[in-house]
Length: 615
Image (cartoon, rainbow, N blue to C red):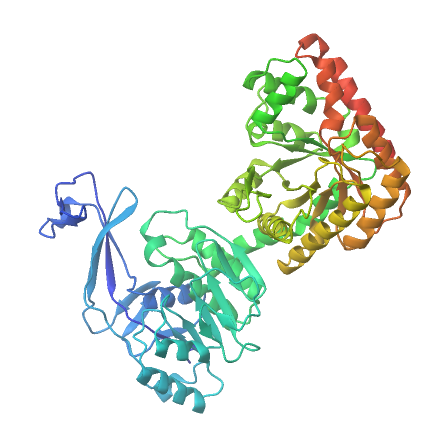
């Protein structure tokens, strides 16, 4: 019995991987490189692979490797030892050339059309029909499939829609039980309109969105990237994703498994073929283990009587900070200062983790040990700041955070380097009628996207919401703004299905602006901050970290203690301080080697006092 019947155009590709000889190329007046086909094939290195104009043969190959029975309808194509062959007929060819990792030009042969033909009774009932995007979708084809499905109600329809769908294609898309679209997933996945295709059964139809950034099926989502430049990326990768998703779904797998396997297949498939079921199972198991560790890592970061040292200033910011204390700064001096912090004796007794910048992540101790490894070996969890500065919203002039571009690849690199959590900061400024709804929503969406990406690669996200202390606003205003901001953030986290048991919040205390005439007492800060947190933060979050927000060191510690005294809380509460821990260190160090031990003692003292505050 054929489990999946595939409809689509097929032909056989010959991939030519050229050697150093370039004299067979000619460049026309439009700057396009053409190959002289009169060459002697033995003079060039090349290899062959069966592929497809549009993906039908690719889908067949992928499904075969997944152990799913499939047939290309109305074709003599079959799989033999993992290779697709045409039985009793000559295959049409197209020649595809590549130079410098990019497709230069391909010579198309005529298509082998595989239009609809009624399946033979000997084939048994099909469980799925897959209409590839290369199919010539006509009104006649739609009617034939519709009539077949009417008399075969157990058969389901999967449609890989073209980017620009014809009227007949739209009708076919509406009929699909699962629809594959090459587009970004919509913000609201329950919308009836999906890329201008009117879905007439929104309660039953699954829509899989495939873009160069994401694969999303219902609520399941995986991030990936078209970072490779080989021919596989250009010609077959989307068909590989479609076939993998359908193969997993047809075998009874979940949407989450389907998009995960599709992402893994897309990232690891080559011109020689996609991955086997065994290899995909192995990779998926590794992914599951990484994600299962999120909760454990988050719990470790919120260990009792410990906080997090925020040492993640950028090179420019750290230089400015050092100069403000009269310390001449350069890359060598910054490295020395970071080593002073990270090698402080007894650091692990008071700090569960340390947040680093990218610069520090790539530096070493004087003895040649990478800082990340140094921390890990001492039982301190290394974290990394991954946001990349601020930009202005066009409509309001307010800040939003940059850094989503290429984030997934950077996070995977950081994971491989040994990091186990990451931080992203969103800045909010209180002014008249600000922060606006637009700014709050934009930053909340960015934080949620960051958190989702982190968890997808096995990193615990710390979402930082910082209502900065500039201005003359009252504590009452800070209560209103902070509550509104946190409520929006957690709404977006829920929309993106971020697992809060493996996520941490870093947020501001409730304070008045620095220029305000009336400043709240420590007890007032404690009561107000505790009230806002209890109202806006879901009880199943892994933990809350308070930031110092430019407060003087002893003031931050007193306010932290007051917040803890207004518990109990449904989640652990601790601190992730930067300047409130480091100001005394810089003032003591002064850039002089002989002051290192005294400066480390100052850091240890500040850490201990804050650890006592959250005991």
